[in-house]
Image 1 (cartoon, rainbow, N blue to C red):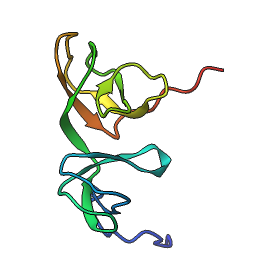
Image 2 (cartoon, rainbow, N blue to C red):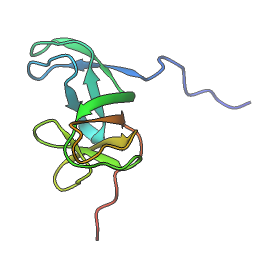
Image 3 (cartoon, rainbow, N blue to C red):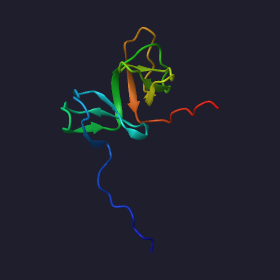
Length: 117
């Protein structure tokens, strides 16, 4: 008989987060290891809030983004298809044109492209 090491605890779509600064509902929080979460509520420094860890979110965007393309979060909180120094957060769920100001993004989906070497 196999030894059971894993015990189910949660579905994994929510994560407790201790705010390191003030957070507003809908803020995208970058976590260690390359994951992101979306704040369900606001909170002040040291408050514990819930982050949604998966799903499709409408996010401010910049530039055209093809459906299925890797998307990255810019320093000003918008998503883009440009990697640069931006943080990978998921994939574009539906194509966004160059004049669109918002895009649908599936967070924590896909794999960040490997660094060129």
